[in-house]
Length: 123
Image (cartoon, rainbow, N blue to C red; front, side, top):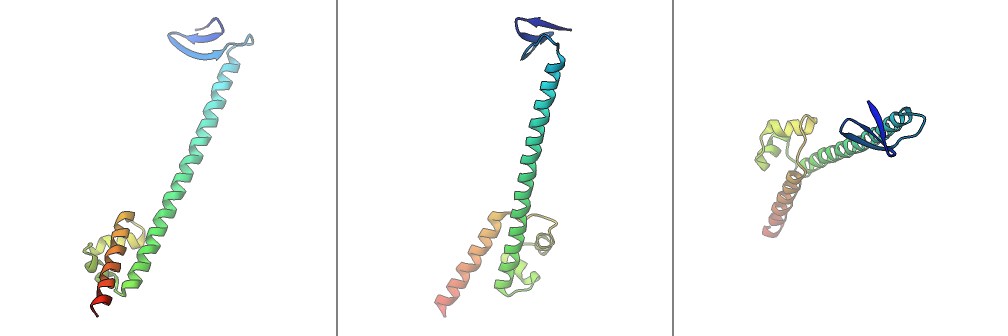
């Protein structure tokens, strides 16, 4: 039950807020559909960009983990023991089954560099 109030289309108590053209509400619904389509497309693009960024962060974190492991010279078991992390967790990070928190990688790198620096100053 559409009715024109001034130049605004209303339906019941809900105000749509679009100018009512004399050729009817078809324009109104096309307008709404096009806006919904435009915003949905924009939202999907944003979600895709966020997912891509998260994937890149995850892959970079995994590569950094591998690089840190190679710097330590340990196998994965000894590497996990050195940092006090369960071996299964480290395996899952390496295999990509779980995401490693970035802050944890930063702390691991920091610990390794500090201990390596201390070894060099003590020698």
